Length: 287
Image (cartoon, rainbow, N blue to C red; front, top):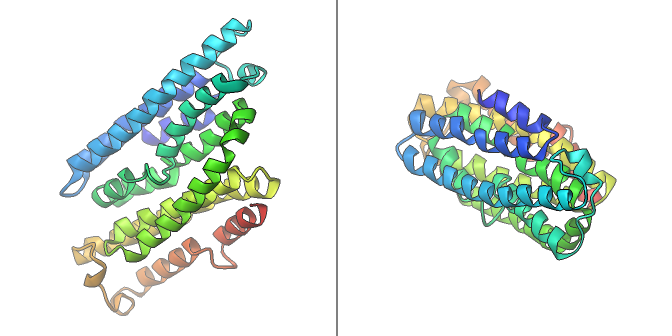
């Protein structure tokens, strides 16, 4: 169900349908966390739901707003091609764009609205975390490209300095938080916060290389982070602990598992020769 709803979100060419599927993905995700998660699963599920619903409600105001503006200009439509022909200039366009952007910043997730992700990743099952970070969170960066830049180009240029600063903060904050984390699941989640900062940096660099690198990053990050979550999930299941200090010499008793973890970690590190390196290099050079 969750994969199907995610597919509909990415395929939707209607702003209202996009919003409905955007919100619909929250329902199965919530039940996956609260029904099969860890000790603090209820707290993590409710926090995830509240953050996402808050962003969704703000976006709903902008969804209604773009229809009203379009109707006033003789284009009463929710279709993206129709809305793209309308000029949302001035303060009104900026406010409408911010409604979408705030929801996507929460979804992406970016600092300081990222705190729901480490809690959700720590308390969800590895499979749920894989879907959450590898697929659902990409709705945020996808939405920035399709709706913020596509419908509000002038307002997006206006917001660019803020978004570039926020992206750099997310890159550094996520990396530092991951470096000092002793919980394996939270560590992987914090690396994702850093990676999403790179994606947003590429989007708002407004260069061909940056945008292309960001889109490649969305795909490559999904594979590398999914591998990390699944391998870490295997390790936790066998060891019974997510504490980093509980491990040592895994390669002696589970060499294949350790090897996959090494390759996945190096991919997350964007080692030259692996796919994420291409994405990150293009984002940095484009920026």
